[in-house]
Length: 391
Image 1 (cartoon, rainbow, N blue to C red):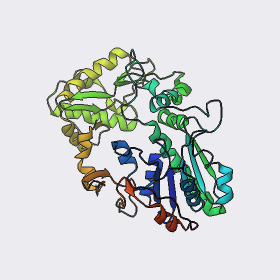
Image 2: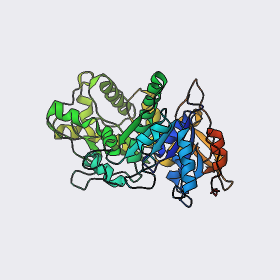
Image 3: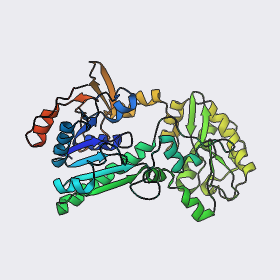
Image 4: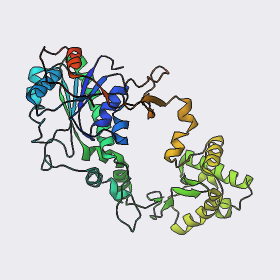
């Protein structure tokens, strides 16, 4: 889809996934890293697969000039240069546009390019807190929490990739590039876009509730979202509405077939079920027999039973579950690449399936490219740059 496009990825963690998404869509993405920068961590490897790696020291005048030449012939730049950083001056939008009016510059900052926090830096923990997502994660009487794997860069990078594609559409119509700016804090906000709705409709500010959810009843009762089973957890909620009522009805029938005592579940007319008037005591009474039923199932048994009955709900997958998922295998999601050390490693394949085909990954993470060869490929001016040592 993006074949022939030249992308320079000069980003840190906030932009890695943006470059990976463009690469998966066919763009030729080159990841710029300084000599000696560590690239062996699992997250670097995962988010920078399908790119070539150029080791370049912008502190050296010749290599800095070479990068400027590449930028003059590139289609997209992804950058996260902080104010005052070595590359910040080189990435000035006016200077870049003067040499390459068609360049799309995607600039990702923790808090965006302007405002009182424009110069602030932030870790993933700080961005997840500043974006508000941590206020909804954790136990109600405990501290706010975040997932262990960094996520803020994934939200920001995905928004950056979308911005780059919109700018490409604009360029195809006008011939002009432009700068796309992304605030990681604002990108994290999209993860809790449902929260304002609760305030608009119910006048409530949703708060963290552990394995439960709120906002489904007028009484403020919490309803279980995660249920323990024999080998992990299941996600299921007693929803109202047409889809929820069908799932609840099918669950009651499943429990009856299994000979499980239904308790309060047996008395409900699921065709008209509406959770809004329920009190906490009523919710607890309904959930007790379901807790006992789910506790006797494995995740696979629940998945197969729920699919057969067209129920809403899904087992909570671990990394091991995902690695052995037959659906992902059937769709050829995994791609085995030979690493720089010669070992075969399994990576997530391209996220997009186009015309029923998933394009294979073209480059293993850390696959080096020589600066001289890249200058020639980009059609940059002839020069004799300093030798860059491949990793």
